Each structure stands twice: as C-alpha cells, then as structure tokens.
Length: 282
Ligand code: HXC
Ligand code: NAP
Image (cartoon, rainbow, N blue to C red; front, top):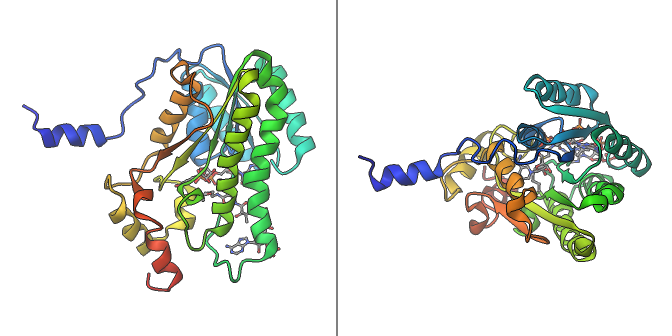
C-alpha cells in the first residue's frame, strides 16, 4: 500500500511523456539553440510528438548530431548553422526551412550565452554580447518567422530564466536580456494575438546536465544551490520540454503573453548562493 509520503515522492519525480505521440503531427517547428541542452531536449520532444523540426545554432557538428539522433528515431529534422545575431542570414535560413518543412507554425527561442561576471568588471562588449544573442536574437527569430507563423496560426515559446525577475549578482547581463525577452513576449502577444500567433515564455530554474549549470554553478555553488530548491532537486530537461509541449499544444490555445516558471520554487527564495559567491564566501 502506498503511503502519502510515497505519493508525494511520485508526484515530484520527473515523468515520461504524458502527451499523445501524435500531439503535434502535421506541425513544423524551428528551434534556435537546438544543438545542445534544453533546446536539444525541446527539439527531440517536439519531434517525438510528431512535429517536423528545424534546428538553428552556430556549430554545424552539434546540430548534425541532434538531427541525426532525431532521424534515427523516425523523426524529421533539418538544420542550418546561423548566428541569431545576423538577421539577414537568420531570415534566409528560416525561409529555407519553411519551404523544406512545409511551413513553420512553432518557434522556440533557446539560443543564449551566459557567464558569471561582476558588473563592476564586465566589459561593455561582454554585456552587449549577451543582450545581442539572447534579446536581439529572440526578436530576430520572431521577426524572421512572422510571415510563416501568421500564415496558418502559430505559437512562440522563448526560454528565459528566473534571473529575469530575481535580482541576481554576477548576472546583470543575462538578467537584463531575459527580462527584455519577457517584456517582448507580452508586447508581441498583444500585437500578434489577432493574427493567430500566441507568444509565451518559460523561465527555468536550475536544470541538471546543462551548459548553463556548468557555467553558473560550479562545485560548492551547486551543493549550496541544490539545498535551496524547495522541491529538493534540480529540474530536468524533460520537465522544461513538457511545459513547452503543453504551451504549443491544443491544451494551451488560450494562453498568450505569459511566462511560466519551471524552477521547483527556487525563485521564491531570492538570489540564493550568488550573493555569497560575489562576496567570495563560496
Ligand atoms: C567576463 C566575458 C566572459 C567571462 C566572455 N566575455 N566570457 N567577460 N567573463 N567569462 C566577454 C569577452 O571578454 C568579450 O568582451 C565579450 O564577452 C564577447 O566575447 P566573445 O567570446 O568574443 O563573444 P561570443 O563569441 O559572441 O560569445 C558569447 C559568449 C559565449 C556568451 C561570451 O560564452 C557563448 O557563445 N556562449 C554560448 C553558450 C552558453 O553560454 N550557454 C549557456 C547558456 S545558459 P571584450 O570586451 O573582451 O571584447 C544560460 C543560463 C540561464 O543562459 C540563466 C540566464 C539568466
Ligand atoms: P546551451 O546548451 O549552451 O544552449 C544554448 C544554445 O544556444 C547552444 O546550443 C548554442 O550553440 C546556441 N547559441 C549560442 N549563441 C548562439 C548564437 N549567437 N546564435 C545561434 N545559436 C547560439 O545551454 P542551456 O543551459 O541548455 O541553455 C538553453 C536555454 O535555457 C538558454 O536560453 C538559457 O538561458 C536557458 N536557461 C537555462 C538554464 C539552465 O539551468 N541550464 C536555466 C534557465 C534558463 P552554439 O554555441 O553552437 O551556437
């Protein structure tokens, strides 16, 4: 017989997909940052649920690996190596993908760059690079996809972060970029709602086995951060992907302009160990 503690543990354990395999059949998605980490996981989840996917990133080898893993599982995947900061190249790539995929009705913005840096020593170019990749790159992909998304209705989901709303030491560049994306999400939702395009974001907290956590929470920080997550563990790429599936699917058709937190409650407790890290106490 299961106890209430067992039931709670089960509820907190990441589940296999609860969505029908045909959830997105007949649909086509472009995923920036699809060559690794959370973007890769989302691309694989969309493909596993029937969508044709187009992957965008700068490194062709990373994109080729993900595309071939999707194809091996009978999915449909193509890729283009493009920097999201280069609007003309990006628009050309998305237009070519729309032709190959038979349209684009889903856009996922996952491309991003980040590193830990105190504002007092961060160079202007370091700040600008992160804003360019995250915020301008997201606008670029939305703008370049608009003609395709508006043809038969569509959905955009951008990956932000809890740093968008929680003031976080060593993260002023990424926090400003992600806050900008959340505002852009609301603005585009308002402008494009009448054209059949829903625009949402998801804000993950610490997600296991990602480049983001390798960069932001090395060694002792990881232990300190994990202890502070109310749910008691890091999240998984599958949990972020499940939230994205929900938003782009028919379950989410009245949701637009929202940012969904997927952080195990981490942001409820403020910046956590980043303040200790900045003070040199970790
Ligand atoms: C201080 C740094 C730095 C560091 C780079 N810069 N790394 N400054 N500390 N650790 C500065 C450089 O000195 C340079 O400024 C400027 O940033 C641009 O650096 P480049 O290497 O020339 O730029 P670029 O090739 O465009 O690389 C962008 C990048 C890089 C962000 C710096 O790390 C990258 O491409 N990352 C992609 C992968 C990634 O970051 N994944 C994690 C995403 S996770 P100067 O003045 O010297 O010219 C994530 C976590 C979630 O986002 C939480 C977010 C809120
Ligand atoms: P990641 O594996 O490094 O993913 C970022 C991807 O973006 C990479 O595949 C990278 O590939 C691509 N990219 C970077 N700059 C680009 C550019 N200029 N043009 C095109 N593509 C570019 O890191 P991740 O941790 O999975 O992060 C994925 C997303 O989740 C990001 O938006 C991040 O901010 C967000 N997030 C992550 C966490 C976390 O815990 N990891 C938490 C909150 C939010 P190339 O370098 O080959 O271009």
